[in-house]
Amino acid sequence: MTYQGNITRASFENALTPNSLQVTRIIQLALMAGVSIYALCIVLIYLLNLDMHANVYEADTVSTLTIIHLAFLFGALGAGQFLSMRIFSPRALSAPSSNVDSQVLAAMCVTQQRTAIIVRLATLESAAFFGLAVCTIGVMNGTLQALPYYWINLLSTFVLLLYGVATFPTRDRLVGWFEKRFIEQ
Image (cartoon, rainbow, N blue to C red; front, side, top):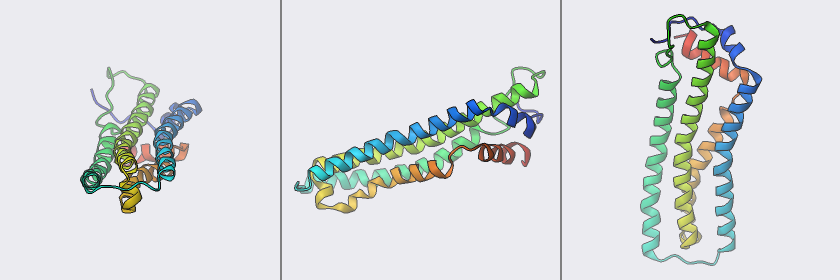
């Protein structure tokens, strides 16, 4: 059975407990922190190896990986948005029986929303880690020291961090997203 429209804003707000909100925030921060720490390590390695020189073959590899990375980033942006909207939607919310209480459905909706957040950020995180891997290769073989424009591979890291900050889970933001997806449809 699918969502029947009996979740109210009040029942969703009741299900969105302070503990639930805190867990969602911790997950979002954790997804952002891993990428940030890796990026800082790459910058440190770069600074310790400023005198390295790249050979043409290695620069070609980084060039090819950069093109793949940028395509991956744009694909991840679209896929993350698409998947999160599919996961957090009235159509995707299903109840085990038609007699499910509004509060139970609201709790399921909160869980569904958290899952959508995780999927959206994990999709962006995968592109960021790919970009960071390209930066690691570039730093280790001297390409980034010789051709600094390949730092463009940090773009996906910045996109993830900016998106994570812009969508950081607040009670009002999550309730507003619920209203857009479930009430204003």
